[in-house]
Length: 268
Ligand code: DGL
Figure 1 (cartoon, rainbow, N blue to C red):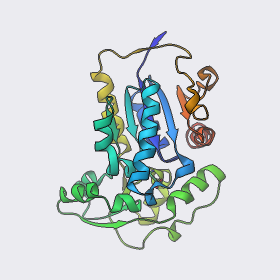
Figure 2: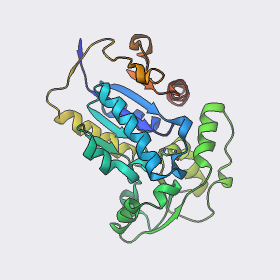
Figure 3: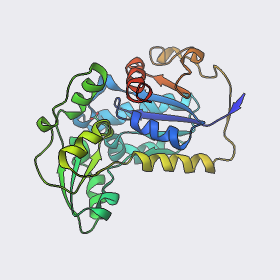
Figure 4: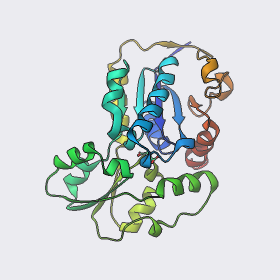
């Protein structure tokens, strides 16, 4: 039996894998659950009610699996409903937000790329109101999330010039976790540094893990398959305990596992 913390990471699809990876670097000895809701993505153009329902159902699943810390690795879900979810669930929920504050510290003219929901959110307006001396341009590329899913999962090429606005910026905030998968290309496109909230979220997760004095004991095969979620959960975790203890959940678990391997394992 090993003593470890269980951390659930959620996103609308493969975007949250970059946050999962950051969390793994910050807290290597945890057991991770990854739930990507790819069949329902992109979230950016869904209604607030629809997104809330999907997030709640994922968090309920995490709750049943004994998750001790949940990460909403999705700027859209965080900006729209993290407060409601924190009121409903007893475990801590860490969100990922557009990193406008770090960008404002070093930039004078920055671009924020995010989904339509995030760009229109009160939370982003609030974050921007906390910044000084930096002029922000907000832009929601309508098809970039889907293009990135297709790029990572199907190997389709992305032409960034079809998705990104023309302009001169001294920094770009990646306000959607999917965009982090093309961060180097975005940085070259604008010849500017990029900022994202994934590392900040991972640092917070690490702090929370350290603060927890009594992490639960974890043994093999200790998660279950509930009939009502039959299609969503692996029944036998032993064969799925690969890649530093990640269990992929949900109907598209195979896609996310494939994307994880493609993004991080084949490159290392
Ligand atoms: N990856 C998500 C985000 O950070 C959502 C992308 C989407 O499904 O539209 O906003």
